[in-house]
Image 1: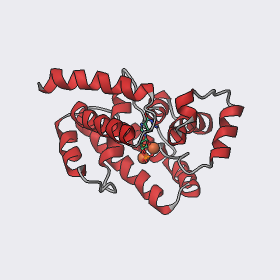
Image 2: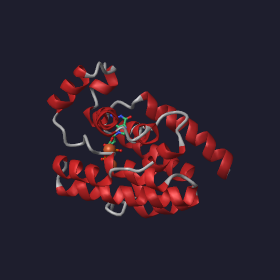
Image 3: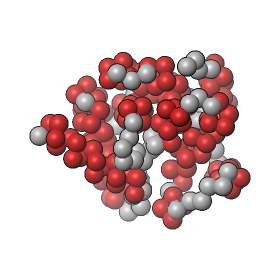
Image 4: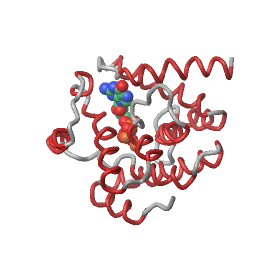
Length: 193
Ligand code: DGI
Ligand code: FE
Ligand code: FE
């Protein structure tokens, strides 16, 4: 499959500020490298990285209107967590605008929460978002080392971090995040003891 990267770039350049535009390019590069390492599709991984945060800077009003016009009903946790909306709306938006294939659509859809039974492309994007060049949180070097060990190893740490952070902040944790966490933790134990 060929991707219209030039169109995608024009779109995200228009929708995103400098910081997140650069973040998207960095995630695309990381996703491509992970795809090469773990036997994914590097072109698809790159395209998913470029598009993953396309909806990140939309207003709440715009997102809610988009959900309404696309027949999306939010659960209570989703309604209370606007940070989750860009993955939900972004996936629908790219499908309808670019039809880039379900591998990319689902990677974007699940890049924030994860879910049970993630595909390789979903795991690659989820992990790339944590380790991209622009990230500099404490612990990012450890995450990058983990991503060299296995996607499971990196995702387990990412999900642990997200769940700890959300619960410390007193925020709701989406069930899909918990499903992803449980599955990956059991897999990590099986793989790495
Ligand atoms: O869009 P990015 O900032 O690059 O990264 P992202 O799409 O992974 O979003 C990260 C944010 O999403 C971070 O603030 C934690 C939040 N998040 C992830 N899982 C959940 C969540 N927020 C809620 N409320 N519930 C979740 O399960
Ligand atoms: Fe995101
Ligand atoms: Fe991101």
